[in-house]
Image (cartoon, rainbow, N blue to C red; front, side, top):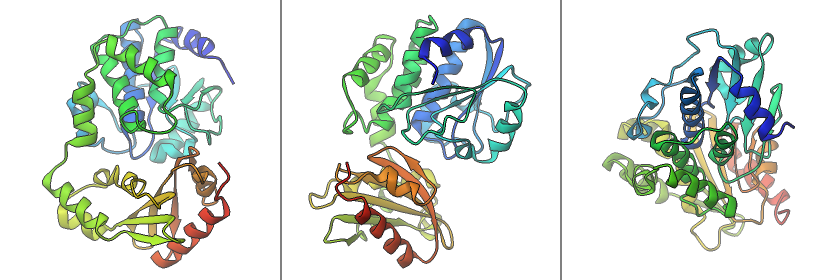
Amino acid sequence: MNTIDEIATLLKALKSAVIFTHARPDGDTVGSGMALHRAFSMLGVKSEVVNEGPVPEKFFFLPGIRAIKSAPSFDAEAYIAVDVSDAARLGALEEKFRFGAKRKPTFNIDHHISNTRFCKYNYVRERASNCENIAELVCAMGVTPDSELSGYLMLGMVTDSGSFSHSDVDGDTFRAAAYACDGGADVHKTVYEMMTRQSKARASLYAEVIGKLRYFSDDAVVFALVTQEQLLRYGLGTDATEGIVDFGLSVDCVEVSVCLLEMKKGQYKVSLRSKGQVNVNEVARKFGGGGHVLASGCMLFGDIEEVYDRLCYAVWQHMGEV
């Protein structure tokens, strides 16, 4: 693996770059991409941020995010993937990224334990958020962050750390957050916009889903299910389900919380969270997914009761491994 100084030196020498973020974008990939884009701008390097689909409107409280494109608009010198554990996480942009990799350098800056080191240059350090890695990179590039760049960094740190409440938050997390605060990031506004503020429709969906939780394995595993019918009825997108999985961990008897998002009939996007007794990265890997020891995801297909059974069995297999 490359060092952060090696990556910084190579990036500073570029004349142009496209920054790729992962499919179904969250605050950490958006924040990582936009912070690096802002750093490039301050260095006079042409760059843009791309994502396969529409970026949720909840991120638009920060400037510039509406400009994220669905595909590269120019032939850049290099491709950079941020907060992306493997190329498949790029979704519809995976093929374009791989094609570009045949003739230009690629960079991978990520924090997932499941990262496959799929680029020519890789910097992977497991942390509460990838924006901590980006903060370190920006510093190594010799960029003094302004309020805009700092706001992007704080976006990723707040969202991926659960407002600095997750068990992988450490001193480095707070040092990176202080770096962003010193640059002008508004912590209060970021926390409110990303963790507190919600529409009446989303609040109604949340109440309905939480009211129908299913418990298994002597109440050690809890499932929340969000269906397409519910999203349609409340007029919401899939981004409205973010954070639902965290509720299950607030129940004292629960060790693993799972949120199942129905993508279409018989297909479920699975989000897993653990209190510490189960390595959910290993659970997700059984089904082709991955992420972190305490927070991971995957995709499952089949009847819903079968999905419950398969996940419960996988969790039981890894109980007590952490």
